[in-house]
Image (tube, rainbow, N blue to C red):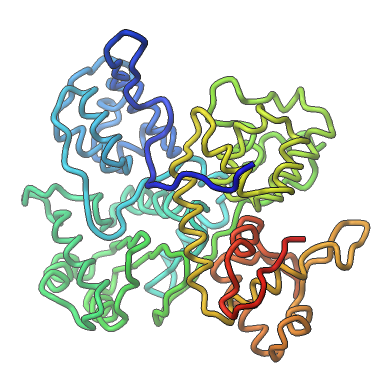
Length: 469
C-alpha cells in the first residue's frame, strides 16, 4: 500500500455534496437532510443547536421535518455559524434553503467541527466546567494532536456557558456583523487579531471589547490561532475583565502565565473485548460505526477473535477519533484480523486507503496527517532526535508475555547520551504535546501515528532515520 494520501483542507461530511446522476442534472439534498446530518455529525441535539444559534427549537424541528422549506436568510446564517460549516457546506445549505449563501467567517480560530470527538470525554468536560466556574487560572489551554477532538470539547463548554447566560466570544460564531448586536463578530475578530500579534500591547478593538464585557462572566475561545496570544496584551485584557475566562486550543502548549493545561489524548482502549458493554465503548462505536451506510458490523455477531482484533486496532491507533473514523470503512473492507495486520505493517498507508474509501472524510484526515507531520517536523533538533531514539527502542527488544516493554526515561538516557534531568524534561515536553502517551509511572510509548511520521522524516542531526520495530 502507498503511504501517501491526498492533502487538502477539511470538507463537509460524505453524502452532502451535489450528486449528478447519469444523464441528469445535479440533485440537491433537501434542507431537512442537510440540517439533520450536520447537526448529528457534531453530536448536538435540537435543543443544543437552538441554544447555540438562538434559533428556536421549534423552528429547527420544523426545518428537519420538512414543514419549513424556505427559512429566512438570517436563520440560515445563524445555523451555519453554529454548525461551524465550511464554505462548500454553507453554500449547499443556503442553496437547499433557497437563499443566497452567507459570507463565510474569516479570522483566527475559524474551523470545522468534526463528529464523534466528544464520545468518552465526561471527565474532560467536567474539568472544563469546573475551571470556568471556580478555576483560579483565567486561561486554560486544551492541548492535543490534530483530530483528537479539542474543538468539539470546547464547543460543548461554549454551549453550556451560553445556556447559563454567560457571554461566549468565538471568532466567526457570535453576534451579527450588521452592527445591531451587542458584540458583533467583527469586534471580537479584531480584538483577537490584536491579541495574537507580536505587538505586545492592546489596541483599540481590545479596549472596546473590554469596555463591552466589563465584569460580566464571559468565555473567549481562541481555537487554534495562527499565533499564541501575546502575554502582556492578554494580561491587560484579563485585568480589566475579572469575569473573563480564555480557553485556547493548540497542538503545542504556549508559554502563558496563569495558565491551566488540559492534555487531550485519544479515547481509551476498552479493557475487555468480551465484556457485555464492550460494544458501547466510545472507541468501539467510532470504529464499528463507520461513515459508509451498511458498513457497521453488528457487535453481537463478532466472534471473540474479531473483538480482540478490533481492540488491538484501537490500541494501534491510540484511540485518536479521526484515525478511528478513517479506519471504520476498512473494518468491512478487510475484516478485523487483516486490518490489524495491515496497520502493523504500514499504518500510514492503510489509513490512506481509508482516507480514499468511498464516503469517508478523507480530505480532512489527510489534512490532519499533514498537521501532525508539521508538528513532528517543527520540534527542536534535540527533541526530534530523542523522539527518533524512542521510536528505535520501542519494540520487542525486551519482550514479556504481555508484549513489548514500554520505554522509560532510563532507556532514553542510554540511547541518547543525554543527562537524566534533560531526558525527563524532554519526555515531559513530548507528553505535553500529545506525542507520547503515558503507560504508567515512569513508562510511556510513542503514539503510533507519530511513530510512523517521525521515522519517515530525516533526522535533523544527519543520523540515519530510526527503523520502526
